[in-house]
Length: 175
Image (cartoon, rainbow, N blue to C red; front, side, top):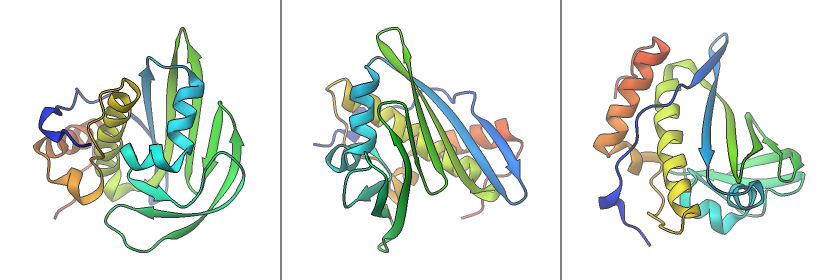
């Protein structure tokens, strides 16, 4: 089910970046009103990921091993190794790390994603939208996935991209 017309992105979060040469690690945090176990399922189950994430996987991410991951807008799948899957606390694969911390009745979800510095604001805008869609999914009001090239068509993505670029002190990439 998709209901993109009802989607409005919230304000940019205080994202962080760690700089490592040409690669930067984007760090985003989102507080969700759902238990870590429910959030974990949304992070690892292929059917749930298809509802919100900017990629598809051919099998669950809930155990270590190899899966095929396909980013939206890129027809080639990438052989991906899940190096850590400690439910419902830590998930690591490729250049991505997720941490789930209980927060009252909810979860503090923290993402580390390594990305070329030229595209750090794009990544922040994309993950921001993905987190919004995830939040709607967990609340039982699914919007349908807004990711990859489709997300970039949204006026909200353009705003988020510009605001994150300003926050990070970077230029927005040229089209």
